[in-house]
Length: 291
Image (cartoon, rainbow, N blue to C red; front, side):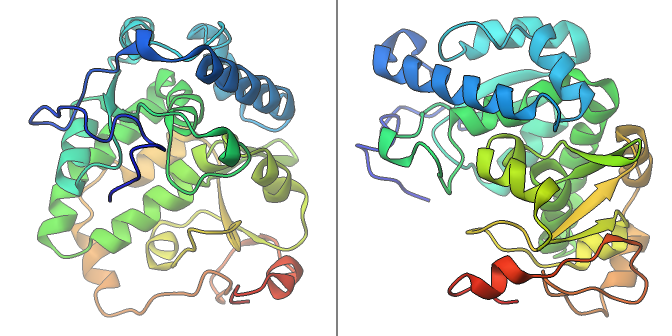
């Protein structure tokens, strides 16, 4: 994926063999630091009663509330003693094999550029706010940290079996857009929701999307959309449950899925444990959305 240099000033930065770059933290402008601070303040206020407790506790443990864009090296020095993870700067999305290798070695590749002011509210590709604010805090949780490493280790096996689309769906519906049951309600843990004020409201409050209990096979069969809110959210019980379900050889899962077709993002199936059935009204009213 390429991106205009004026949008991503790291576009021509020298890349190491593992696609990491020098973050050049001191080169961020005052306007860029201010943009981070405004994004952070808005999202933190929104998420106080919406995010999982593990995320809120990690914001404090990692001292992410300090002013300005984080220096990834300094952030890593606070994160590594907790779970062994570090954060490494990259220009953009890295090749799948590189991404899996980083995760397998407890390194999270984070985009170094911050979104332009014109895209303050919505950015389709991940920037430093999405990657650091959305993804990194939960790497301080031991069970979640182990799940992410296990996901990385499973990547190459999925590639060798031509099952990468199925594994990508697992990442999408958990790491990016996952919900967790919390008492009688639901909380957010997916980075794509955590870093979006609009989707933080939509995922929990709007009657349009389906909310369905997590099932590994079901998730791996379910297609997703990348340019709008999700039509289905899957709900885990805990990070420990997610780890136990996924800390295994997926060969039997892939064998089962090989002869099965994909499930549409807006569909329910008879085996679903539906928590809240969606009306799909938002998607019916949104031009171009399949509902």
